[in-house]
Length: 203
Image (cartoon, rainbow, N blue to C red; front, top):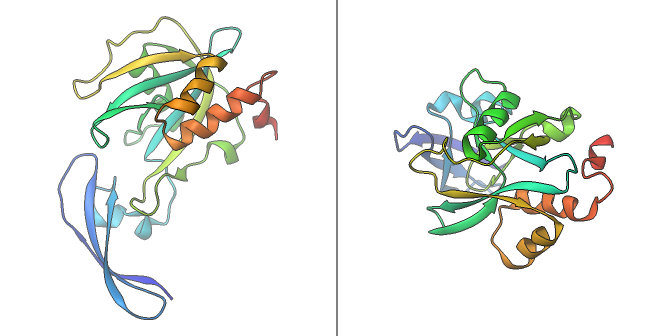
């Protein structure tokens, strides 16, 4: 059976760290493996805690009374040296409920006020993002946003524009632009669930 034999923390960063592992494959051969993690300490790695608490949160939110536009950010990402379409998102602070994190992140990134829509836990629970490279997991929060777009809450390291995309623009984004995978899948819902974009939450 495959297993991890030992782990060594290689960096001391605030939000993301690099861990080197000695792993064993199903035939008993050892090899090096590497991962990134939000964990600041070895004991906080999910392989040790076995919990699935969300490290981060993303927000699938519809704008205005008609709910005919979805709130996106077109954000510069250093890993691509380019812009990509995403949902407003961010890290959950220690001791913070992830719904409150969603409200805070929406306000900071877009200036908009989020009203969270209740959903069954199976839709909101944290799922893993890119498990081949990181143990990070992220919760998805749903809601409706109101207000006026503002960039006053952005940090210096954040460069983004807020996009209130209707279905025509969503179709263009899916055909032509770079998009984060969670965002792209939910945009497919938005594109086709025209009567009630949250109808899938009733299942």
